[in-house]
Length: 258
Image (cartoon, rainbow, N blue to C red; front, side, top):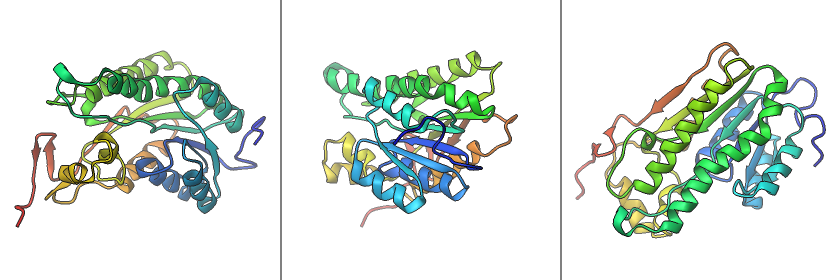
């Protein structure tokens, strides 16, 4: 599609969600569409985002945030004006200790969570500023503020993403673009833990075993939509959202298993 002006058309605000093919990204696209936004759904899996976009009167754009040319094409598709950018694309790989963790896994986590967020934000910033009321919401994690055994690759990436978010806010303070982060704790989605553990379903299920009501994607999407729809003079710097059962990453209430 050609985005020389805007995908929104007359009177419709435009939102862009990366990593929109599943989980928090897909739920956020649906939530923002319910708020009246024309949502650009961006992800690598064309079939997933095309189905989602069709269901919410949105726009599907295949995009890999690790590719400069792919992100440039995404910016072209969005056009000259964008009201909301949700940098959701990211993920974790592995849970090995530092002494034997995969360097390639850590490189991938940094490339997707940090460089991907940087690349997309740089490409879309002119369109966000053009509206006079743009907002960037980066989907971080409670892992951005702590560390835990086996999590060095993911926590390092999320710490860096938070540093990027906070620096961007300082740099844009005189311009009409807000910058915030939503930091979820334990969220049970269909893909996050499965990807992290290389498709090992049993190991992925173990993460949530016995947990009393973990968050679901819609909980985080609701928080993101709330942040994105505050008045233009209101900035939510950081919104931490966890299930009641999770006091900390290592302190989770689990039902005794039979």
